[in-house]
Image (cartoon, rainbow, N blue to C red; front, top):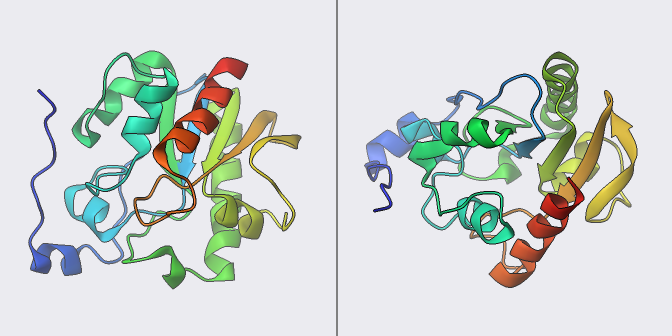
Length: 183
């Protein structure tokens, strides 16, 4: 049975503002997924992509990265499959709209340093707009990018947040599946 994190109270959500959450990372990953930044929900429970409407875990499963649907509580299980998770900006906010250009630029340097240290084969940004801003690539499209980052191939995927209506679940799973098939 899928074990979901406890629902934070409104006070816990507000107290999560600005909190960071630990990376799920190790040397030699096949893929390091990079979210934009933690939601207040994720900050409150200390887990990646923890808000119930977030489709990250479902997209991973439907794309074939995992053999079953994992819950945010099981994030560290991803390491057994050589998959990791981090954030561009590791500071919980109610919305990514609260981030400014300086946050994205610092985040880009931070992610590049992690890639140099841990050497994943692929770094996959889940959020096209965030990738475009952070790395100064306003015309970047989804999928594999021509450039590399610190030796890693770059993929740009749609944001799995339930708040992002631009990609319905079948299209989101297809984008994730294209990455998985490239490995």
